[in-house]
Length: 133
Ligand code: HEC
Ligand code: HEC
Ligand code: HEC
Ligand code: HEC
Image (cartoon, rainbow, N blue to C red; front, side):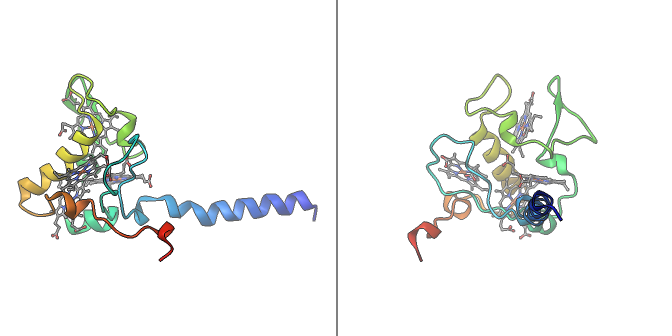
């Protein structure tokens, strides 16, 4: 076989193997990348396990779609980041990114009297791998 064919095959296989690493199944924290200078460690959030335990069936509970200020039923934005629509600062009726997360996450926890509402319960400090431990 030609060398480039092998290289192509190897690349395809590694993509196939790596892809699931970035799916919501393995998500354990909410990514802080969209924030310029995060002040807190990322909030813990094991996507699938959380939603199963909390009994949330509707993806639009978090991944919503709005049209003219009204939530659109039977549609979700699971293929988008929250930061695709929520900028760091509020834009009119669209809350800023931090506010969007807090209102969504804490809002439900307060309403249901279940789930963490204290800063340190979500933003859990832990040793970083860079510390070499
Ligand atoms: C229910 C979980 C939850 C609680 C409770 C919570 N947060 Fe957050 N917070 C989040 C999530 C999710 C984000 C989005 C990014 C991330 O993972 O940090 C966020 C983002 C932030 C950000 C912007 C990103 C950064 O690190 O600068 C700040 C600041 C912040 N939170 C501070 C607080 C403070 C202060 C409290 C307590 C008064 C608090 N949070 C309570 C979940 C929570
Ligand atoms: C309790 C809130 C919540 C529910 C319910 C929820 N998600 Fe998510 N999901 C999130 C958050 C928060 C993120 C991270 C978004 C970000 O970083 O901007 C996310 C990210 C994702 C991602 C991107 C994964 C990645 O690694 O980038 C996919 C795909 C996804 N969700 C699919 C779904 C589907 C499908 C459902 C319904 C079966 C669902 N979600 C229900 C909160 C939720
Ligand atoms: C496709 C664009 C879009 C995406 C993606 C999106 N939002 Fe929103 N969101 C909006 C708009 C538009 C509004 C303002 C609705 C209105 O007019 O009242 C809003 C409002 C909100 C509100 C306040 C009203 C409410 O429904 O409670 C919260 C909280 C919120 N978003 C959290 C989130 C979180 C968390 C994510 C990611 C999991 C997310 N949003 C993803 C467009 C989006
Ligand atoms: C629609 C309601 C709802 C939303 C939205 C929601 N949660 Fe929760 N969450 C719950 C409930 C209910 C529990 C308690 C589950 C149990 O232990 O029975 C919980 C528990 C948790 C826990 C405790 C550990 C665990 O995984 O069970 C964490 C951490 C958490 N939530 C983080 C978040 C973050 C971060 C967000 C926003 C990205 C979020 N939650 C959005 C309902 C919600």
